[in-house]
Image (cartoon, rainbow, N blue to C red; front, top):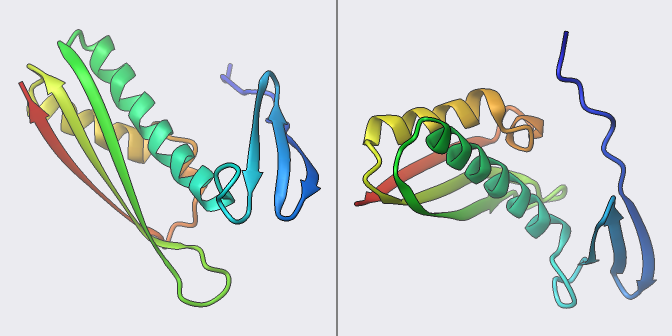
Amino acid sequence: MTDAKPPLKAELIWSDGLRFGASAGHAAIVVDGEGDAGPSPMQLMAFGIAGCMATDVLTILQKGRHPITGLRASFSGDRAETHPRRFTRVSIDFHISGAVPEDAAARALTLSRDRYCSAWNSVRPDVELVTTLTIVP
């Protein structure tokens, strides 16, 4: 038996300029190709990758009963100079607060990157991913 999820469905409706009203289920935002009225598509991709990995890391540490009190994920993405201006390298710095053992946090990052994060694993395999980890007890 698998944990197959139904297809994710999203809809964008153009409003003006490069702006679209976007919705998926109960969630709705403005997507703006210029990044003014809402996040641009690449900013949304950054939110998706960092958010997916942060959620995984938090869940794994909580399931392991580690005393995590805070988590911040800072995303930086290098982009190709020519079209398509895709990410060529992604760096995510994870700052964890609490008395979390470094080996447990590193294991959570590895599990997210290699197994659980569907957003990261949907990206082309030639994109480099670098993660760093800082723990503040």
